[in-house]
Amino acid sequence: MMHLAAVLPSAGPAVNALVTISKFVGMTASIAVVGSLLASGFLLENKAGFLTQNSLRLRAVTFWSAIIWIVASIGNIIFTLANILGQSISAVFEMNTLQSFLTQITLGQYMFFQTLASVFVAIFAMRIKKIGGSIWLLAMALLGIVAPIFQSHSASSGSHALAIGSLVIHVVAISMWVGGVFSLALLDPADRATATPRFSQLALWAAIGVVASGSANAWARLNFAEAWHSTYALVVIGKIVLTIALIFIGYLHRQNLSFKNKATVNWPDFAKLIVIELGIMITALALGAWLSSNRPPSPGANPKFSAAITVAGLSMPDSPSLKNVFFLYNPDALFLGFLILAVALYILGVIKLTRRGDKWPVGRTVAFALGIFAIDLATSGGIGIYAHFSFSYHMIAHMILGMIAPIGLVLGAPITLALRTLPQGRTQEERGIRNQVVMMLHSRWSKTIVNPVVALAIFDGSLFILYFTSLFGGMMQSHTGHFAMNLHFILAGFLFFHVIIGVDPNPNRAPYLVRIMILFGAMSIHAFFSIALMSATTLLDGGYFAQLHTPWVGNLLADQRMGGGIGWAMGEIPILLALVATFIQWSRDDTKETKRIDRNAERMAAMGQPDDLAKYNAYLSDLAERDRRNN
Image (cartoon, rainbow, N blue to C red):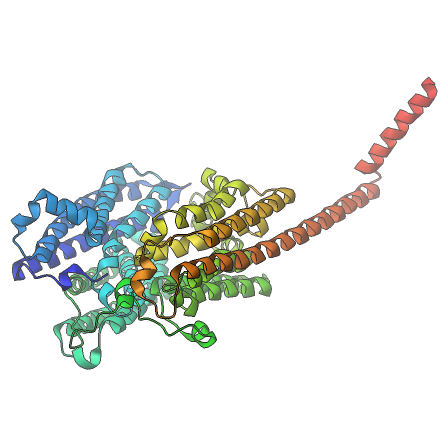
């Protein structure tokens, strides 16, 4: 996982400078892409989901910024490869060398993906007409921006998950913050007055993310006791000073908007302040480009080689014990950031409901909190740490992420809470965030995936694809793959239990009998999968666990079979609980239906009209009377 530039010679200061310049230009252009898409998708008003003329004009900004991003990305690939090879730039254009770098070296693959993302944005920038298109392009742009981070200098630091995850959050937050300011600078005063209040709320969250993630990343990458006076540390301090200045300017913006209405805000002065803010941000981006092109100072002598740090990204833990399982902690910053954001939004939603006089069941909040805690335990806690070194502990983490945590999240009803608290459109014609979520819930894609058979196929079918192909070993080898695998476990589990016992809105809710049949099917498939694991005669990890030489794992095949048994035991219990919950929900619904029929009968009787049952009985009596007369 070490960065190649850390161990191979440099091509010289000129190429180093070109690497930094290309990164800065690419970073600036990509942030301009993010800003223009952010403005058209979220900040400016829309008409029933369609972009207005002012938003459509921003497509040209997106397109030309993407073109610059493409050129800078290609240049960055060329200059970085020359720097790694320690040769002149002309040597890079050897086709076999370039092809090998882009297709076989992880860093080259990530940089190539970034270039493809910029090309994708450029192709579709002028074709988007709805806010949905802007949102999808924004997501692709952000993926392209963060892709090379997974092979940055942070990857060679001791706290791999903390350093990489915090840097991803840092870059995303900066992109949203700086991109938003860039888009405000482009807007005319009328549009700026509309977009600024909404961006002000987003900027606050982004600023918190920048400060928190930047602090965590600096702590993970630098030994300040020995590197305090290094150039690298001084540049980090410079970024901190600029960030403080930006936060102060943001505070002035919020004060200006809080105490004045749109009609009295001095928009020319406001625009000048935005230009100053944008200048400071560009300086901060230049410092960030320099940091990303240079290694953090070494703490001294070269550390002893560690297979655990090289392969898994963290130090080898002591043998498992109850204390270690519950108290060891190695923060996976990317997962931790998502969990903190989810908890913050959930709490804000509950507070918003409480302030307007509505009640939110405490049990739902507790269930959601337990689900979040379970995810943290299985990703950053002791279970998550040991999951990197033992298949059996990996299976424990898998069951927690895919079987236990999703039940808590589903019972927490986050979608219902979001629909009750998300903002609606600012005008009668605008499709607000809440309406956009409603549209997504009722889309054809949503109706397809909540089909019980499809949910079951994703939930259990993906197990065989993951573990009985080379996919599992490949994903365990990288932080990106490991993160994607854990995220899949959570989402697949959430989807399945949402279909079975979910209280959130479902556009294609299945009858209870079908849900029970799906649960029995899930139990059978999961049991078959576990038996297959326990019966396997070869290792399924592609040699991953063997590289680690874990001292407290003796026989890897026996550990794998133990994992199969753990998966069987831990997987059946949540499904049985879901089966009990389904029967309870079915019984309650029958009771509610009976009460509804009784209330309807009482209303009909009070109005002097017979209910449906009385009509049916009268009909049968009439038929019997006719038969008696005919006989």
